[in-house]
Length: 148
Image 1 (cartoon, rainbow, N blue to C red):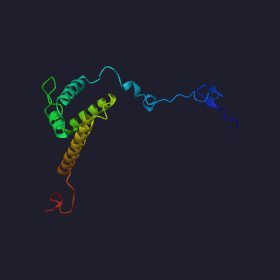
Image 2: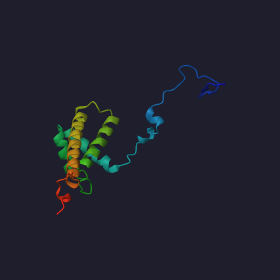
Image 3: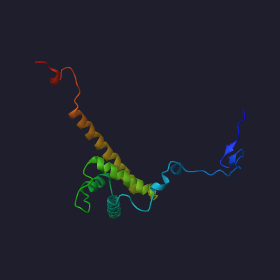
Image 4: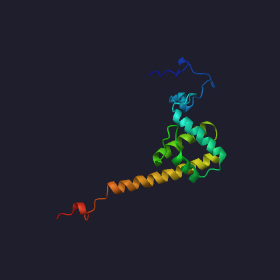
């Protein structure tokens, strides 16, 4: 059995030591192109701009961030972040954008992360409550299972 050495240089040719290049995982997975100069969601870009202006003008706390999200109205006058799920999505996108800008060590980022934890907890509580309301546990003494 003959096993040939294979490399990017070609079969049978060993690459020179140190000639290998390290390719980041994002690039290998095709995620490198995800960061473009044109924002794919102009509504979020508008929200992000307004949100960062508000953050710069105040000392945010998790509660004030949640209140801002609930009362934020877009250009059409709609309130796009009324639900906890929409608030979670928006805060996640804000954190991603801040991380891309190198702001993940800032105090603001930490406050937004705390607000995300709070909103996530509230969202989980609401979902659990709704599940209990619409899918009650089926015990033997349940009124639905009692035969008259």
